Image (cartoon, rainbow, N blue to C red; front, side, top):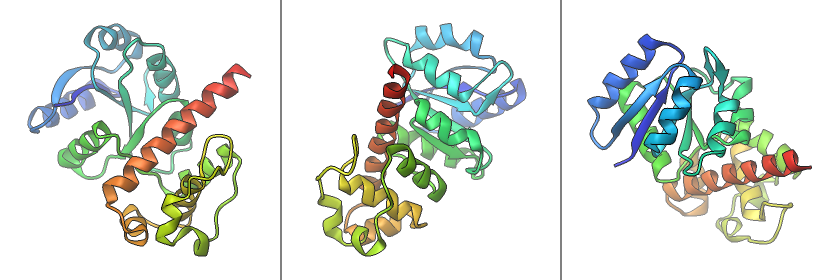
Length: 215
């Protein structure tokens, strides 16, 4: 059962989300704050499986949260909470260390599902994020005719410094606007497997981000 720590932008929102999670089976409440400075010692001591965090906090923002979590000896996964997938800060936070995001439009059950999926190392990306990921990796979008066949899922030849051709094809299909279920049908795989592949690509964004910091 994954344990969840909440970082929300205000006390009322924090308490409302806490109440929702406490009514949800399969999740363990670990704690919560709305100020990062108060949260970091608690997260270090509690070592939750997941930190669910707003893109903006009263004293900080999600990119800094990601960087602070990267310094912990036991790093929780970071789920970004956002009212829209179009926020310009979203991809920057994903690159900095966040593992996934959840658009808050479906209530407690949708949030619980997003937390469970992230705990299972599954994530999603929208078309804009996929295009940004391709640009971040320095690779061009695959043509649909190349990326769509089921054989494209097994192409392990390199496409760039960190990404293989299968990863490039997956990002390309997402960039073209295909949904996870649609990619799964084309590639004759389970949707969960496509989401696991996306989660791994997000992890590669973290590697690239750390390399850029070193350089």
